[in-house]
Image 1 (cartoon, rainbow over the protein chains, first blue to last red):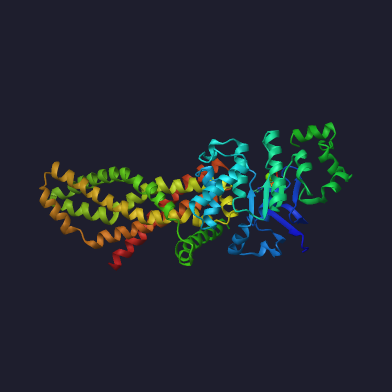
Image 2: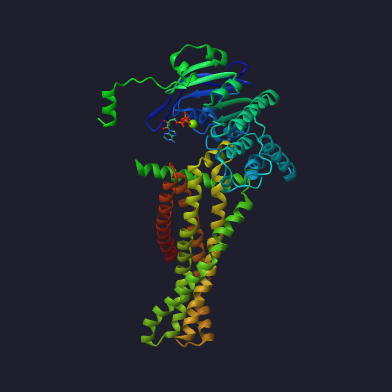
Length: 263
Length: 252
Ligand SMILES: Nc1ncnc2c1ncn2[C@@H]1O[C@H](COP(=O)(O)OP(=O)(O)OP(=O)(O)O)[C@@H](O)[C@H]1O
Ligand SMILES: [Mg+2]
């Protein structure tokens, strides 16, 4: 593994039951940069992130983080690794029985022995970073979708991790808030030197934040490289994605009739 | 196939629960005391009214049923023995366990199940927090403490129900009823009841947690699993009861 690589995935294969989701994919994610994962809905991006934090075990393949294969780690070693990684889930996944402040404080309380007053200050700082000051005592059910996402980001950053995963951070946010989030991601990379992996569909955001891009298609890696190479690519699928064109119609009207008739 | 998977999953859950409740605390990973107290209030303290009312009624019913037979032999005072012994050895623990299965076993399944559906369990794991330690262990300790405690309440109120009926409708003398009860009850009877209650507490927690963790889909499956947890834990309570009663019959 090269020194400037944070995460390296080799020949990763994964299944849900008998269904193959990721089919033998390999790529590496550079350290201290922002990597964006692109790909059509249902192509396995969230599944990939869950592998990168050890929630799912691959059918075969290796995932190296800091030169250690997390696919082979036991639970204790994995938990040590997870303290250095923060993740925002696609649905935010805040604990509904806890307030926003308690959610953000949870990893700090579990993994450090800091005084309550110190924890409170840390929590307020994280919430301020995502513009949620004043909502400390709200429960997740009392927040909007975008606010939950931002609270989830604050929780992911609670322990100042080395690596951050964001699963569609700006989906469902207004353009202004989404742009604010992009700025935050840039700041985290530049100021805190974090390695950031973002799954997103928002093209403006991709051009703002991405240093490196990985594009998945039907369980395979279609593209992996710097952003400039992606925009220069003339692969038809990549062009369609970047120009927001629909899949080309492959069926003629008669076939279409057959499909909707269920034949 | 399905059975072997169930056995495997249950065994794993029991194994992990045992690890996080008995072994890990010795290695500096303590049980979450505050969460345990919260669960004790929810599962135990809040069940006192319903356990009391049901035990009181069952005490009355038991006394009436006993009197129906005993008055033919002119041995009405033995109502006290029958009520005292059957409540402490059998009905106190089992009534309490069935009420707690319905109230708390189902709540465990619903809580864990909806957390599973909303990826909250995944979120816990991703933060390096073991969901068994975080969620199941406090519930286990709460029920291991509160089920015997509720059983003591049930024993007292049940016997009081029998007493209340006997001194009014059956016109037994209060003092002699109390004396008769005290003479009939052995420490052994009460203890075996409490041991059963403790075991029921473990069974109810494991069933509720197992059903919760089995949720894969959404809200509707949470409902199914909740129902299944009540049915399964009542069944398990009866099986445990059969086992322990047989054991105590031969070995005490
Ligand atoms: N728990 C699961 N059990 C079975 N199949 C699943 C499960 N989760 C996801 N899948 C399947 O795996 C595939 C990839 O899902 P995934 O959530 O990773 O997609 P995604 O790329 O994140 O899509 P989106 O952009 O819509 O979030 C989907 O086809 C889905 O049907
Ligand atoms: Mg997804």
